[in-house]
Image (cartoon, rainbow, N blue to C red):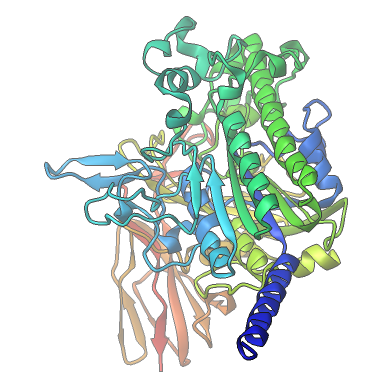
Length: 608
């Protein structure tokens, strides 16, 4: 007895100290909406939109003006967030993954059905980092990450894959039997919300998707709308953590303001469609012709009917206000349960929305409206408050940032950097480079091509966009925020164009597409000739890091080069564009005549 009691006391003391240490670690509430246009936020300068709760987060935290999504489409962007890696690196490059069926036909599969369509196995996810630090993890709402699976869904992966979340509910766009939005509200309400089946033609011309008639949601009970259900689940989780005192990571997946642009009458009554003015670039492509680098269907015809376009804009803003109201419910619950002071709150969205900028609707391209997204971090206990930061950042930075803040281990696979110093000291990152990528189809000059790849590079004031088989784009987004002046035609920007072209392609590899094949004999570098290219360039670096490479020779017309120094080389090709379009006229070639699945760059070549 004399021995046991001291030992028990020591155990209790140890457990108590361990719980106290855990409590010093911050909780994290990560709120992500869907398709929220950066400029349609009060904190980002919009005087018309009603977003008091998101604005309050900005007042108590750090607002980033240059945060880029790794992909201007849901699933790849969200997989990048979860893995801390760009889509090409984590393998989850598709919004819907093309799978070859037993009959040989290709079928596009959504998330939640097959593990093989997801990110590569063995990658540590963001919630797994929290789990390793003994956090309770939960994810009510939209996730939409290829790779997440319920148990016994995939015959080859029966154990499923929870991504690292202990609690999951209200999935959306993801096959998740038993834990889907439909399971919460019933089939009829789900169909009303999406206007599926018998509700798909309720309105004239089936125009409810964008709500061109400005009519409230068909959902009968306001609290059954998706974001309301997600907010309810989030609040319930917060209340449980207030009771048990456990540290937690809560991923809140709201769906608005993604289409359908329908919400309750309460939020629609806050706006008058006639108050909205179309963007000054709304008729840009009408006057010049469709953009060669934007899929046909993204070009909108609605602005020709101004009143209907105003209805769409007002409906979109009403959806933003609904979502903002739900943000308020979650934050208020933290306050009411005494958890606010020790909780990091993040607000962002997976990609933007054009809302008729450039005459476009949706995302699916690399203009700022699609890739530059709102990103706010609030934690008054430690971070700067009411601060605007101009650093160029990406979703891939979220994992290393949060890992450092909770003393977790950042995986070697992550491609981002920690922003902790930026958040605490208000420093700004200079000349940071980030990327975004997309696989699209239905391009005017390249019909029939599926999953055509494009990649954007942002560095400093410049943004470069490579679209395979189509003309390049280069913009100074500081001087030309509407991205109307393509600088590849400006000889003064030739060096910037060439360098960003190389850096964008140097390490970018993915399914279906192969780099230029190269052979080396002694010091002679030879590459396969191709009618796809008109000339070549050589880059050199003393190390294997392409970021240090310099151009050693440009405009090579033959398919060989004799190297003079040991080190590392890359071959870069200039595509032979011949097709023209109305946008630039008959004198400017903008597309390949014969599409090829060869990337205009080689792998790294080592000479020793």
